[in-house]
Length: 413
Image 1 (cartoon, rainbow, N blue to C red):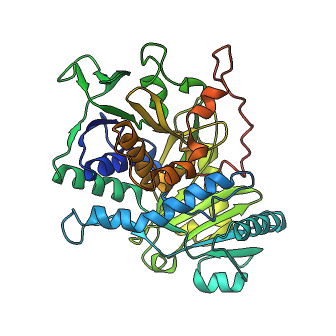
Image 2: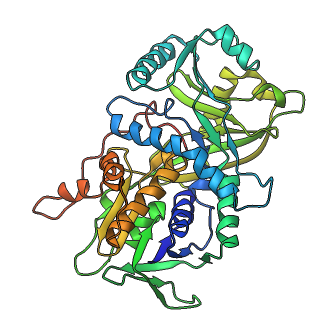
Image 3: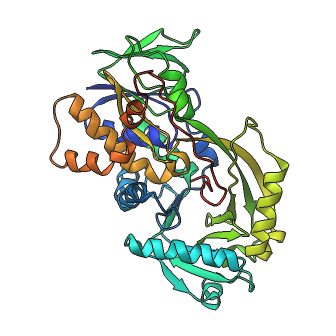
């Protein structure tokens, strides 16, 4: 089948890769690949750290996608020059609390993780400091998640782009103006592009928040009103550089709560450490000084040596959230499949999302694989029609939007 993927963040890149590997003729469209939310993402592959009450179905998706990551990364690496980095690291995660209230909250989430069968181990703070010597001696609790890994999204995105190009996949760095659904869906390019439009058998919209614009007028009354589903959740991150004498002393991802505020530090193995992430729903796209201040203060509470780290980069990006925090993956009109709304889980869910899109494409082409039904059933919480069903006879698909608590909507993936 002829497939066009609109959007080259991590989800779009992974989807283009999976469709290409399944034999489809793929074109990837994005005016600036891997420069949106992917560029600011932390890349924590942490089902334990992301488990929350009332989100069991979503946690099941996170766990399954984490399980698929090693094979996904190995497949991409096999199509790169020997030794080319993918950024995938399996060093585990420490989850720590700064005060007594944080201890209670994290103990509750630890119990939830155990109920869900996730690998979470309570350890003493002394043991935590043995594992990560830069941790503060004043922590109140610690939990080890040995199967919660990390990937550097910038390295993995670069690896995917290199592999796609090496395989001859067409990558068009031009903006999309709109999409028309139908038996032969059509992507219209922005004025001034090298061509007016592209046709395909299927169009996959993996453009994050931009999916709302691209699917606004699919034609003939088709589509889901993503304007009333997606919401921008902005977040600041700070890229730090540890001095040479301290860099080897941080090897695991450190996630923590500081007076209820979430914070994480992700060592990249080369002395760089990513500090994140704030979570705010407002109209300010730039970096806010207050967010950076809070991140640095809280990081020092957990790792006092952060005072000696140099600041390399500060940036903010918006992530596409949904009312129930679950993604939106599946057909929304004839020949059009969306993959968006992944909120803070875009990097973690990329391999599974790509496999889900591939299963939907197989169904559209009448060539479903054994196991597709089970895979799509697992992702029932991501069905776009849950919002269409909520529209009712009036046609308005705007669901209620829960208040996002800072202890729940926490970080860039």
